[in-house]
Image (cartoon, rainbow, N blue to C red; front, side, top):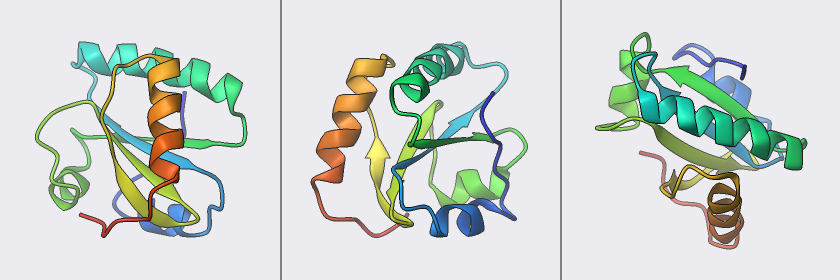
Length: 112
């Protein structure tokens, strides 16, 4: 299990993180979300210093609108408390890791 974020604590809990921080939006009915969760569990073992949080899209409609989410699962990368970009890749630990590392070499973007 990953720590869950809500509209009331997402920004507060992310802003102080100096490690790569991944926020992923899921739903209990989403099969792809379960596959992504397994990949993220493995990624967490390879990078224990990276922070991974989960948002239940069914319960957090305000965050779904804020992040302009149109499909699940959705992942967003933050680093040093700043938004970097949406992460879109295959749901495998190696693809997620490579995409995060490439993204961290780029400057932060404006948050959605």
